[in-house]
Amino acid sequence: MVRLRRTAGMIVLVLVAVACGNPPPAVTSGSPSASTSPAGSPSPSPLFTLNPGQFGHLPAATPGTQAPLSISCVGDVGVTDPVAVVAIQGRSGEYLRDYVDVASPHNFCSFGKGIVVDEILDPHHVVITSPLPAVVELPSGQVFALGIGGRLVGVAPDLAQVLWVSRATPPALHVSWETGDVLVQPYPPFGKPCGDADTASRFGAFSRDGRYGYALWDQGPTTATYLNVVAGRGPAFALTPPAAGWGPQGGPRMAVWSPVADKLYYEQQGNLWTWTPAGGASQLKSGLKWIDPAISPDGTRIAYAVRGTDGLSIVHVMDAATGADQETLSTDPRKRPFFLTNDLIWLKGDERGCTVNKLSTFVYDLRDNTETQSILDQVWATWPATSALGG
Image 1 (tube, rainbow, N blue to C red):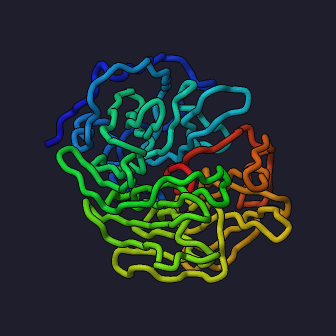
Image 2: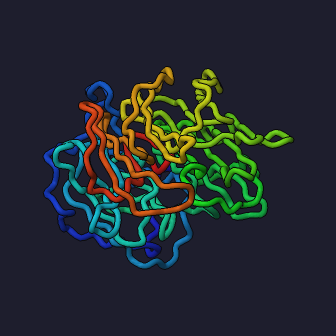
């Protein structure tokens, strides 16, 4: 059944035809076939047709009353354009920013105060978690509020299902769709982890083709950590705490999908592991406790941070296939890398532990190994690049 069940009356978009600070990009909005995509480019999304009927696979929320959302879009972006959700210095709210022209990035959509964009499914579909969990289609502005009874973990890119954790006691991981629900894994009670990016893993995400999804129950270094992978609408792989606990090195954390294959990377007890449907779990690299890994759009490189014995965090780049080190991005402390394109990495000055300071931000160019100041206060999600933070 593929029927639009937009929650009319539950949420209203305020769509204003104003520019986001610059004119529409000079790109086409057609949907090229996968066979004509440039080498290393993501496959065109099946949702690029802007067909609202796709929403019918997701569990719909009960209609209610919500305040209007302030979302403005201008122009259009190409189906394979690299995009990012960002906060810009001197401006409020968040922006969906197009990087097809790296010399002149374009702000495609703006999201007003209080709207939290958590994930980019493709350049025309984003997931918001505040003021309510929903999928927003761009630039049409159609909204589908998700009917889940807890914390959203991830939405499948083909809009076929969602992962979420219930507010029950104990909480539990569910995979749900329009007409069904499967309880995948019960979890211990919610903990109170600090907001330190060194320990706070992303809740989870689906692979780019939507066939697999992962969820991480990572409530801090002193609580039990779980990694669950679902295939379709059932469990496929799980790492659960042993009877004696994970020990001082900790359990699975900081997971991220490859953007070009069904391959999950994650750290477990100080080593880097991968999981694939065919090969299962295997160790890729030993002796690495990485922070906030991000994978380039072509899937060939991984940027990640490591905190040294001096307490400072340095960002490195590795080969995604072999785990071999390629370079260190800066001798100055940096963290939270995001690939804006295959060559440009956004970085933030280091923060120590749970202390949050307003620090400088940078863009590092892998082509000539140069670093410049960035006008972006924060990057929250990228596409087609993947990250352990955001989409």
